[in-house]
Length: 318
Image (cartoon, rainbow, N blue to C red; front, side, top):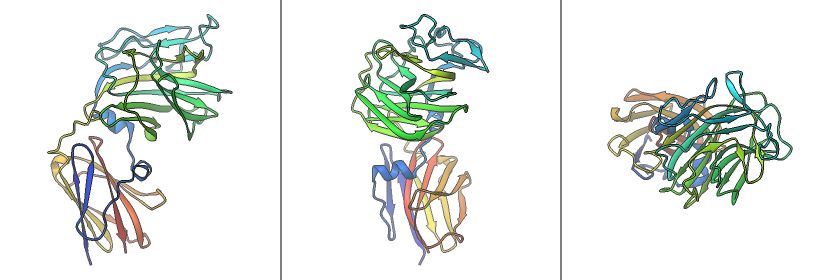
């Protein structure tokens, strides 16, 4: 028997209705593991308020902010180099500080950075810190792994994500006070999220390579420091765009039809272990995904629009 599945996207969350057999249970951990929420997708819908390439100068290319402050941090290899020495202990130490970012919204933001490390620190090392006098958010490397920090280390969480050496990586930090979610992205993938009703930012809206409270400085290369304010992050989505997506689960394929106003989508099929089996871009009103090569069982179909809205649905393939 052919089963018809119906997905309905609302402003605050994705609500999924199964007109046949399956009903999607909204487990937050399953959603985190099995849907690909990417930093680049979020950033596409945000308002860029600072852009420091840091490849040959300290200029903000948006023209909205003053130049970054740099001390003992040379430009080389089309990036800026931080020597890992804390300036408060040694005046040869590197300092890279953005100015106070104009019109920064601490309740709904994205900050992103590209970085490269040549060796792992013996202890923990900051990559990017928000705030000079009060370090309210940040990303670290500890034991070769990524870590999330907030509220001047009152919240500190070490992830399992390893940082490879001598390769460029991207990191992203986001916060949404409305949903009470802080998130850490690594190489465009969500690797950690934490429920946080608030962040004590003390209006300290700048970003740097050091944690002055603990006397630690990043060792490696920086480039492409960007700061965004968010509309999607603050929960303001367009209900007209995210209206209806229809899934028709046939014996040999999955048919996906949607309103053209939704725009392009990324559709992924995953097994119960979270392994990605198919990833395809969907732009036409009707798309077919062949499933004849997969054994019978339960799968998860995730849908992500260009506006950063993600939905997921269980399917049973025969």
